[in-house]
Image 1 (cartoon, chains in turn blue, purple):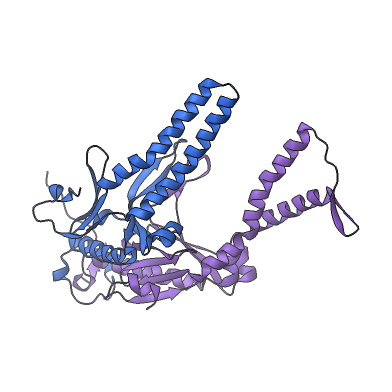
Image 2 (tube, chains in turn brown, purple):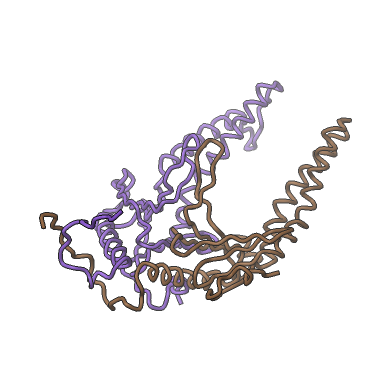
Length: 197
Length: 215
């Protein structure tokens, strides 16, 4: 259920809202889970045939978790919603409770759109839009990698990307200086520096 | 309608666009290609030494059934994966080049790429932290006045030992990289400063920051 409207500010307008398309989302989850569960259950059968009951039970339990993972994935899918407002991008997620995450437009470093094999085969015109905002994940060895906020498998990915680019630029520049007060032209930064004055 | 037109805003003007030159882009990782080539020759020689041609047909020479043989075979198999990957990497870059396009607009930098689908990466000029021009031996040998511009926009990735290093975005194998870099620097400065305060409204001189703080 879309609960984004509950966290909007009083004067915040929603420009676009949507959620992942079911088929590519579910297949992307299913492919991974099926491979894991297949390997683990075969492992359990081999261990059982060899008389090793302990490892066999462990493999079977893990395999079963991977079998039920698509169900968890479906429950997760029901909660996923995205919204682009005139102030930020909002991400709704969760399984039991509902979680929200948002990124202000002036914090966006770069915007990507990615159309992969699953989009081509099962999505039609879906794609994943990623907004990098300086968020990093720490690696095991003390390093870090940039992590995007992603709108995964959304329909009309290029159209939403174009819209998001425009809105984020318009809002960010207006925060710096009101766009309605700007002159029509920009002849470049030509101010001379004279510190003796 | 071109693919790029789908993601450009209506009032967005293209100031510069370029594509990578064929050979510098294909062989940008030429050292890996040579590693792949050497590994492939090495593996082929080992396989060739295990077979013989008799009466126009192939015959596999008997292999000793020892743990060392299996270990050696496994190591050879492990080497085959990077060998094939590195050897065919230029072909991947050839396919990638077909969809690669670099664009500077009056609002941002756009990088088009992708082999299966067409992907885009865009960032505003005020995100540019550092610009690097790089002319490699490959550019000197295969390129016609080619080179690469690497842009740091604050994205990081894990380097050797897990250390965080800048994840540069590359405009690779482009023609006349020094002039393009100069244009990008000028554009980024003029647009970045205008976003903070309109350049048309600025004074002609800046006599330094002299505002006193009142505590």
